Length: 267
Image 1: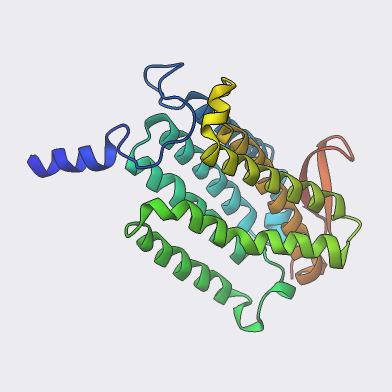
Image 2: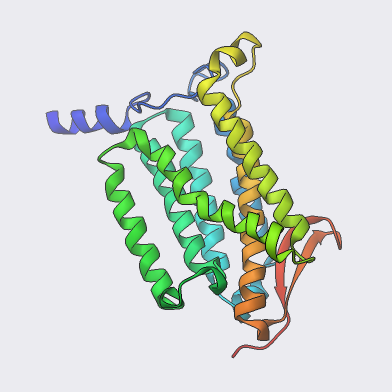
């Protein structure tokens, strides 16, 4: 019984996480620690719910890979985990939040990285094996130094940023150039908001602004989905050209929620 109480106190108790963002706790609701930081995860729910409900990625899953559906599920798990963490500020919530992001990144690399960015030895099933090994090792490492994991996640995400820069400056594919620029811009602005919330908290409080971490959530959710679409298209265009991919939008023809539509044949 004593051990159980210690586990609850260390892992599940509200405020047991060493991480606390700029937003004042329990100001809006007595049961939600960081109200705006919790609510701002809504995009992580809305986007995958719409995509899975309407089946806009169905042709991609049929002709290229079911990785799109796996991505969307992890996308939603990140939102659930982040909302739980910011609502409770518990150590268990922090673990769920950061480990979910880690697995989303690793799954993204394994399913969506075009082969032009991979060593030949890491194509096919070996990409998934490596992602599983890396994600598992970093998950274990989380328990060693949980206070450093948020910074480690940025390091893991660096290749995605570099690939977007490369697509903009080197390849300049007309079909994806605008999307790559928007995704990169939102990512960089989101990172700036994350840093500003972390290290300029006193300034935002003096302006009676509840921090900027909520803005980070919204921007990174949108940019992450754009990344899924961008690299899903590039992967299918180069590595599975028989799928005949194109980027479409809902509800308009040139603006709205993007997705990859395939009209080819399976190999």
